Each structure stands twice: as structure tokens, then as C-alpha cells.
Length: 219
Image (cartoon, rainbow, N blue to C red; front, side, top):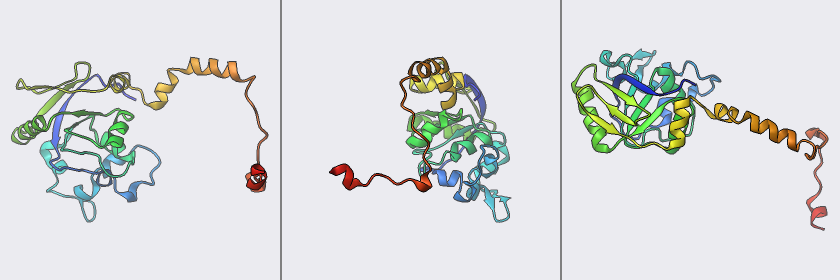
């Protein structure tokens, strides 16, 4: 996973509250087994008209927001089901940062596992950013994770809070597997020390397995 230190990019304002993961990735696309390709279907029902024609009224289809990598959103972003396909789609589309006043917990957690920074700002700060993004074409923001700041080219600067552990995994570019691999030496040592005392059971063919009757165990 690519480390996140700083990022500067064009802002796309998605002015809707309670954007849920079912809208990010509709159910018919959940059969895919890899993370690649989900960017095309991000916000599918909003982005496309019948026949997959781009909906000219949807913000991500506006030419001024083409290539945006900072998504500006409203409260409770990422609510709905727990599908991890949602941050896959966010990342595959090209977004590295989401700015919102609040997030659904599971979506928030999944963002860190996929190299996306979901920074939380106040309602007032988000409102100011919406005004600036909609007023100025090409409006961009710079995000500095070590210093936990969001700033623009006009002197605006906001601080955001983030748990130290979450900050560290982004700075180092670690997902859950990468975090586990950091402790490979300790895990190997533990296995070597305990292999002699581990109780090993014969393999069981579940087709022919007959569990002990419960009545026998009670008596």
C-alpha cells in the first residue's frame, strides 16, 4: 500500500448528506473478486443514465472536476452496509482524501486499510470549503498528514484530529497484512517455542463425522 505523507489535489464537492455505500457500489457489482476496476462504477446510479451514458447533472461528470483526488462530502458519509468495495471504488477512482464532518464507523475503518485518508473537519469548516470549491474552478487543497493540516493557496488552514495508530499505518503504507508482517520475527519465535506443546489432532472427514451425543456429555 502506498504511504500517505502529503497530498495536493483538485477538490470535487459532493453536496449530499448520508451518502451510503450502496450508492457508492450498487449490489450488482459485488461479485468482482479484485479491487481493480471499481472506479468506473463509483456512484454508478448517479453518474450514469441508461446505457451508461454520463449523467450531465452529476458533479463528478462536470469537466471542471475531472481528475479530482480530494472528495468533499457532508455528514455521515459512508453509511449503509459494511461493504469494503466502497473504499475500493473511492481509491480506484483516484481519491486519496475525503473531507467530511462525520463518517460511518465501518467505512471510516476500511478507508485506512486501503490507503485513503478520511479527515474529519467541523460542519462550519466543511461549509466554507464547499463555498470555495464551487466558486473557484480548479480549487485545490493540500493535506499534510504529519502536521494534520488541510490548507489552500489563499491562506486557509484547518487542523484535523486522527488517532496515532491510524496515522501511523497511513504514513507507513500498511494494511492489516503489512502490519502483521512487521511482527513476523515475533510470530515465528512464538511458533517455534510452542510447537512442541501444541496438541495435534487427526484430520476429520466431516462427511463421516458423528459428534458425541449431548445426552452422553450431560450424563
